[in-house]
Image 1 (cartoon, rainbow, N blue to C red):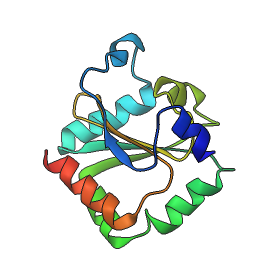
Image 2: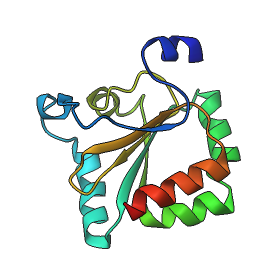
Image 3: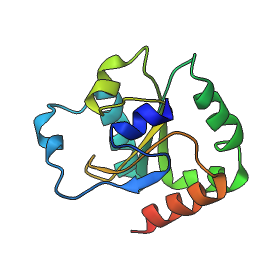
Length: 137
């Protein structure tokens, strides 16, 4: 699966999205589920972290157990509105964000612009540092 995802241009880890990507303007309205999270983030001065997963996804369960349970990640997530999105229940949201594999994490800026994306497993220490750096920008 990782090979197929890599062939599509994605790689495990978190990477900065290119500033010249204009696809955001062509997608239509932001899904209501995400609008609520963006509004909450704006009120609280936070960013939004979307966690796209599925109940049947073993890698998603591993990410929850080995990354999101770590104290350093929990602490870093205090600066984020964390929204888990089941891709089977919210196919339209997954399609809006071009989710092609799971787990996929998408970080949104204050205006709803995608600033980072990761696909696959992450190192908890590296991920928590990246979350802190993104929030401080």
